[in-house]
Amino acid sequence: MESRVKLAGHPVHPMLIVFPLGLLATAVVFDVIYLVTNTPTWAVTAFYMIGAGVIIGLAAAIPGAVDWLAIPRGTRAKRIGLIHGVGNVIVVTLFALSWYLRRDQPGAPPTDAVVAGLLGVALAVVTGWLGGELVGRLGVGVDDGAHLD
Image (cartoon, rainbow, N blue to C red; front, side, top):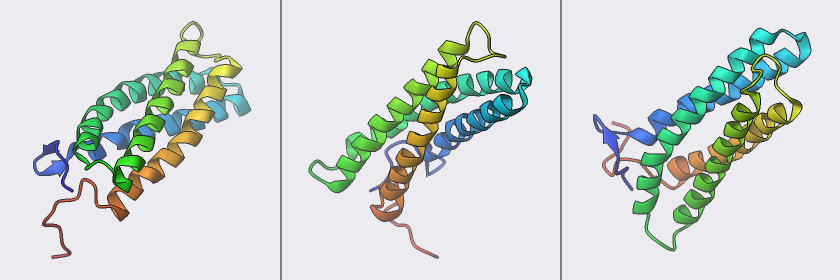
């Protein structure tokens, strides 16, 4: 099933999701470095990365939702796509919560802000795998004429 939202013939959703995944995962790594070193610069950098990741994550959801709506009802892909999409909404919500909790002191995030990020990145591993299942195994977003040559 081909993607419904394309740019220069390529699906837009997979192009966009790399940014929030990278930004949000790296923000969690920076939070861990902050916790180990107690250097506020790491936490401040994580704060800005989370903000960018949340915004781009919301932008990536739009073509993802359009593609999901085009999947035929009653299929395994429709069910997995729903879990993938809802899971990613929860991921973005957890990181938005983390971002909000840090707003007053980005250089010294409260424990619950860091925990929200850790939960978000753990769930993102699962939803990312589900996205790979949709594309790699079920062919969602793959051009109908795709072949090795």
